[in-house]
Image 1 (cartoon, rainbow, N blue to C red):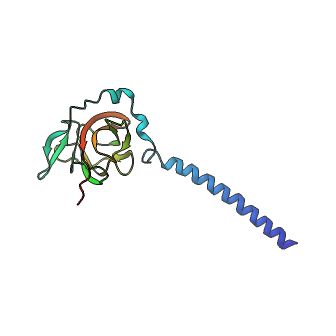
Image 2 (image 1 turned 60 degrees about the vertical axis):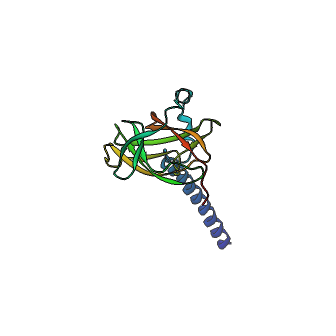
Image 3 (image 1 turned 45 degrees about the vertical axis):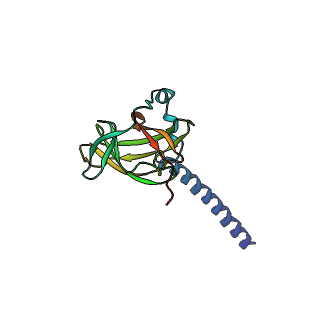
Length: 176
């Protein structure tokens, strides 16, 4: 009888403790996912942001980093990296002019389909605070990818405020 009671008490304690641990983990996870998650951060995009896209103003050369061109918009945002091909992951080095740090959110908006996707392969948002380089106040490396070809507007938000819009043409992936 003592063994059954002890076993029952032990099982009950384990159940109560596991319930408490589980509850604490959920609270911890909620706090640990401020903005870096892959949640739908496209919700910060307003209708005005979409309407104000100048589809004819594609990125241009705004400088060089020695061997490669910096493409983007003068005194705002630029990147060093290859032209994107659909469904291919590439690396870009972002250049920020006028901002030295913040939470970067990049929402890619497809002109024909109105599809919204994260450009960064890590999700919509991440922190940046890289050092000054090539005349920029901050830089940040990232992996980028888009699912389809066509004209895309990259809505660049810093600390949830629209900072710049980069319009790019994404080509079909070249098979090798």
